[in-house]
Length: 318
Image (cartoon, rainbow, N blue to C red; front, side):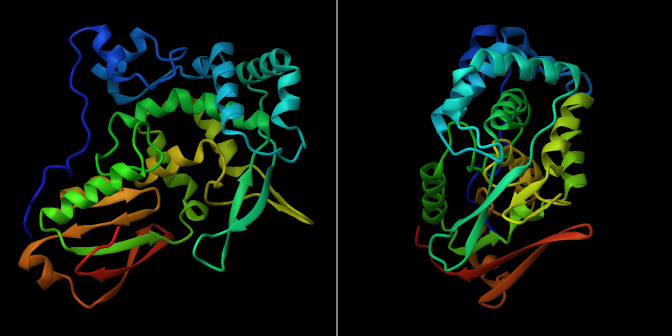
């Protein structure tokens, strides 16, 4: 196998010489949360690699206000309580103050998620979409403001989905560079029912590698196990994180980050966008190791497994 690029190395953050440089590097973070002192800690690393005392950043009113503006910008329908964004906004300060108090006191509990089914592009199948209440979307956005930079700091370079300042076009540009570099053997793969099958305990173990605030991890567990409601039925999920929840994209990237790094260690030039990935290899060694023209890859995570089905091909159309 030939190593034709250095792009598979994990993303690293060089040390900042002064606070201004840290702020410039992290322009996308929520400024009401990530002060100069917080950014310095992010750059330099915290003791033991774990963050404590994060919940007080989540429930601060300026962070909740910013989170609401984000939810309003993204639009979306009402949840199980039938409260729309417009209705929530009519008593905005009162609603945010109440939420802040509940989060600070530990009395906050997420409400059930409304599940609906939407068409899956290019398929007759439908995929589930979870719609949290507006209140819970605001709380999740505030939580994500706090957690995302902590994990983004060490996410692998070859991951592009649901990440700040990255997108589909960036992934396609990297695919093109890899093809030009001679990586023509491709596994075009999609993790089957990925969001619905993420094992909760393994996911939380990965979160707890960096976060030691028990109130934050309890909040995440509450989101993972909150009831799901459909017409005539409801249940509590034992695995997965609902597509449509504000926090789900970050959690999905946290869970797959070790896969990203492992594939890089093995020499695969993988490009991943959420649950779609395309590992590439180049040269004669890749041709010899490619095996048959069709393959099914299994990525086992203890008793729960996600199935990744792909097709090996000598060219790639993107």
